[in-house]
Image 1 (tube, rainbow, N blue to C red):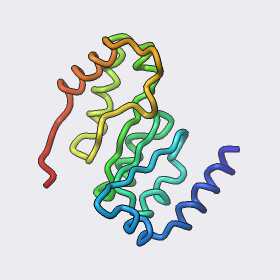
Image 2: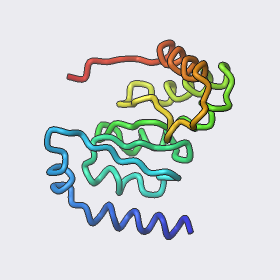
Image 3: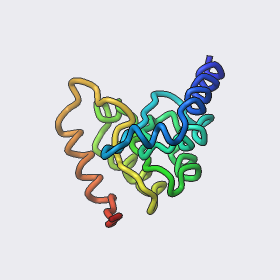
Length: 141
């Protein structure tokens, strides 16, 4: 099944010429998000010319940066259930790990998909505190 999904995604990415993706952008910066493992199709996705790629925890953050280096912003990679069920320490550890892998790459720290309903507000606060502690901001203008 994964092979079928991978092959279909590759065909879709190849069917969207770079100029069409850029024409879609206009004044906007479209995102690309896929749930699941994007690892086998990373090069195909970035070749569309999309500006930001949102990934869930099944994709390798390290491989994303190696593939996208300078061509797209990576968003996400934190397991959504961590927000619902994680401890303060769990959340801080994962945020720190993501920021270490990101180093100075173009990265937006975020959940890999929708945060589950009923997520405790304090867990979102822990996430924001960890992001503030380990995050880095650079002027990209």
